Structures are given as C-alpha cells and as structure tokens.
Image (cartoon, rainbow, N blue to C red; front, side):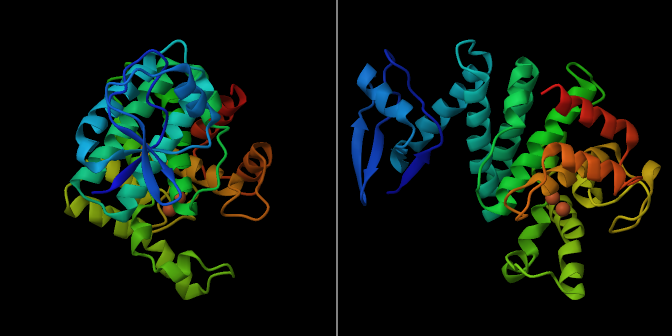
Length: 312
Ligand SMILES: [Fe+2]
Ligand SMILES: [Fe+2]
C-alpha cells in the first residue's frame, strides 16, 4: 500500500469528502477526513493555509483519480474560482503529469499528458484571464520538468491566441501535448551532462542536440503521437534562417507547430530562473530574440507572441 499526493485541494466547505484523505505527520499518514465526512470550515481553514500536503491511499486511488478528473472539468467552468487559483491548479497538475511521463513514457503516462493538455486548452479557452496568470507562475522545480511545463503552457497560450476557438484546421489538444513533450528525448541524455554546471564540451553539445531525433523516434516507433505532433519534437530547434538543427531547415520547410514551439522554448529558456543564474525579464528576452536572434523565428508568430504577452 502506498500514499499518493493530491496536487490541489479537492474539497469545499459543505461537501462530503469523496475519498479518505490523509496528512503526513513525520513519517506517519494520519486520516484527516474520512470518505463521506462533511467538510467543515475548520477543514477548509487547514486546506487554505497551503502548507499541508494531502494524500490518498493507493487502495482508493481509482475513485480518487476519477474524482480528480471530474473536478478538473468542474474547475474550468467554476465562476467562483479566481484565475490565479485555476492557473496554480493547472500548473501543479501539469508538473505531476510531466514528471510521470519523464520517468516512463508509456500509454498510461502519455494519456495523462493528453488529459492535462485537454484541460489546459479548455481552461484557457473558457477564461482568458487564466492565460494572464499562467505566464506569471513562478516555481523552482526540477529544471527539465519546469521547462517542459512552461513551454507547454506558453506554446498553448500562443496557439490559442493565434487560432482561437472552433478552428477546425487545428487540433489544439494534440499540439499542446506535443509542446509538453517537446524535450522528451532528453531522457536519453546522460544525467551528468544535463546536470553539468560548467559549459558543455563540443562532444557533449552534440549529444544534447540528439534529443530532437531521439524524442521523435521514440514517439513515432511507439505510435504515440500523430506525425504532425511528433514533428514538433523533431524540428523545435530548427530556425527560420537555417541556423538550427538537426537539419538546418529554413522557414517554409519547418512545420508551423514546430515554429510555435521554437518561440515558446527560447523565451522560456531565456527567462527561466532555473536554467540561468541571471534570468532575463520577459522584455529583455523578447528584445534578445528580436535583435540578437534576428531571422531565427517566424515573424508573424513572434509578433503574435509579443502581442499575447503584452495583453497579459
Ligand atoms: Fe529541446
Ligand atoms: Fe526545450
């Protein structure tokens, strides 16, 4: 038997607790509220303090997972929940899914990412204010996980900004899933290279650059994503001026979704406080992308990205 962390509060005052909920005290899991118990103001007070982590027991995890899933859908339309709280919930839910998929890519973990992407797209479409909050979320989680989640979120926001709702030509959910997974090939890069603090040697660089092909091959061989979505993984380091990798393609030859990913990916890397000791502000990052990296990105998409951030 094991205990599973609940990534966000799942009960409100006056509701009946859907599962046995536990808190961890030292190394011991204690029952906080039993399944069916009425949630009181005191329970909510403890929840809202935000410094307590809640758990469900593995034997109860199926009903809890079902409940969590339905709750996510309810959150999308909940007019009483602040956009900031919605953004936090998306973020923690995405972090959980991305951690799982990086620890083992299989149909189950991929399904989780797909569900997360579906939820992210729905939420952004249903409440534009959430987008504003999402681009501000700060955290100091594991670099690769945080980076993947943020690129997933920035890229999805840009796609929604560009294509909006009801555009049948674009499958926003598939694109969003691909954005979250864009660096999945990094799982094959040796840890000592990923965690190296000093500049990488040429050979180490060559190895890191293989993550695009490794990720793409893995997804395609296992038939996990459509070829259009998998192309995001393969081409997200290509640049419109032909200076990218792995093939040095130029603008027209780089798929649209990969060009979207390139912008979100670069912006996240420049502004990240995890990957860099002196992260840039969003304004500085956009200036560098426009001035120092001139020609690298699709102009129309870059302008839309600046416009999107400006409206947040
Ligand atoms: Fe990458
Ligand atoms: Fe990346």
